[in-house]
Image (tube, rainbow, N blue to C red; front, side, top):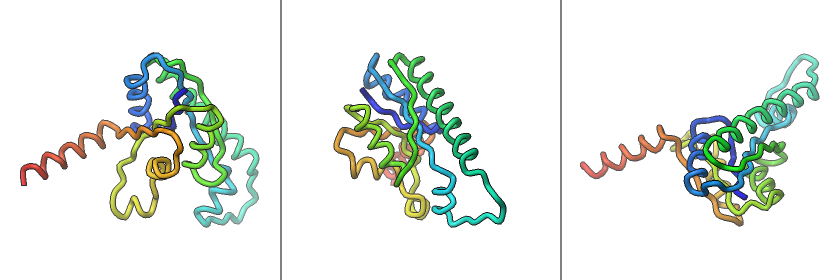
Length: 162
């Protein structure tokens, strides 16, 4: 069983495609994580001066996450994997939620995309893939999107020219 972290991004789509290439016909759980609204507000430090129905917002967030996970599972199935969709709520960090679900489904590896953040953006936003690599107790495959991979290859070629 391979757990694929999926958020609908090009990087996540590339992770699905590469999983199918690396583990043809394998079983996969496609996971999308979501965060409760109150936790999001606490993290960003936002305050609202209006009454908010947290349960309704959370219900919609969970529904959206399930739809995204199902989209990823369909991509995985179309690529030849035996895929199921799954969601999880973030209790601490996105990476911790992914690793907890990997343990729950007894995954033999985690596959995730790499946004390719560098410099200040990486320091400010952090890196889910980096956290997973640093804290996983199972193999991890980090897959860049075609755009990120192309930019990295170009950078390498530019370095070779100089």
